[in-house]
Image 1 (cartoon, rainbow, N blue to C red):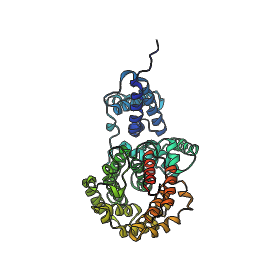
Image 2: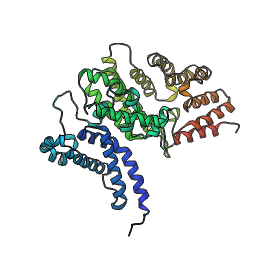
Image 3: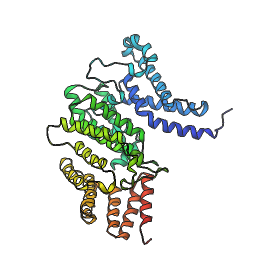
Image 4: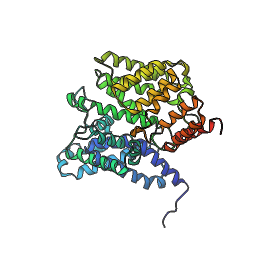
Length: 426
């Protein structure tokens, strides 16, 4: 007789979804090291998810669900490799080891400049120059960021089918071009470095302020991105922007505990309890920024400038002590180094703090016609804050309502609605 659903099954299903979202990057990376194809690795990870959906509600959630998913996907990968005739000779030598040895022992690096890290290999593989920049970003956020196709589409304000096509084509291109699953050496590594830094930053940002969902934070993504940045710093000690990115992430991560309240509600920078900022991470950020400055030979790069801005916040023991004039100047340099409407919006905030809300509002109003910011919820949010500081509460209320309508993260929506309700004259 067919088993009837139990009350425990929805709990198991939720656990499976949560665990898979957290563990899928490691599973894909570990399996890709065996099959040498990121597309097939993702399919095998999905197979492991299906197996979990079949077994966990019936047998219970294992003590180490991430290890269970990895083991299931790896066993399927070994079976697949065995079936490939072209691998028959290799399997005769290593097939038994693949079943009994942990993934970290495969293909141990022979060169001291190599590194045994599957996630880092996956980042460099998905950032191969055979892919367009747009395809690299979409594929990396899908495989390492754990974002769905719909979430990536919302983040980049493009149709979902467009993102889906980019991801499918990217995986096919990597397979047909026989791109090696490796951290490259020398000039090849340097050629991919910019893209690698960008996607590590994007992964961290998705963990630091999720584009969608109920929770503001996804700490696992922040931890993965920070670890990858630290590993890359050790791997490339003479690259200032690598150290600068590491510094920036250390500073940002130091605020994590203070960014949400007990119920998960976002806490704005000015309201954060800075005693909850992690001073050890701040110290690490200062040291990394020092290494970036020591290895730089020219003008500071965009990550160095962002790290310097984060350092200004880290050095201030209260919101009132923040050196907003220096921050505004740094944002001006960043705008010339890496022009972006978002950078200009951040500069407007800094200017408003240094010179007053009226000056900041002039800069924000100049951005209202920017196509890239048309559906960006932080533009009306910032404008609402400035209008409120100027006493124009009716206009501010409208801006907060518009921002809440545009926000895709439920925590941010609640915060914006609370701001709207808090204005006088309701």
